[in-house]
Image (cartoon, rainbow, N blue to C red; front, side, top):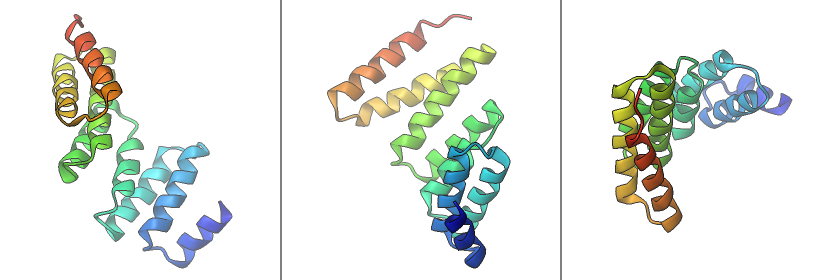
Length: 139
């Protein structure tokens, strides 16, 4: 990690180094604040760096705001199925935790969008199962 910290220190606007350090910090449990700061710096340095955007969304501790961040990432990168899956997953978690029907609707709609582009039978089956299960939720 020292090499990554040195690289960021030497080149503070290097988006790739910032993302690599943010990822290393995230995986080693440094907490969302430092990761969010590095991710935001990476985004400022290179607004097209999806990894920076992903870490920025991932590091949001508030579940409702994390859903909103993933929606921003998904809107910015419309073909990013990982971002879209994170919208759906986080919305489903929010719906379950807060008994929020709007979040539930968002999760279902987002999984349905993913289903339209899913290529693999296993993906389609998993998405069908998720949609079917979420449609059965009652709070």
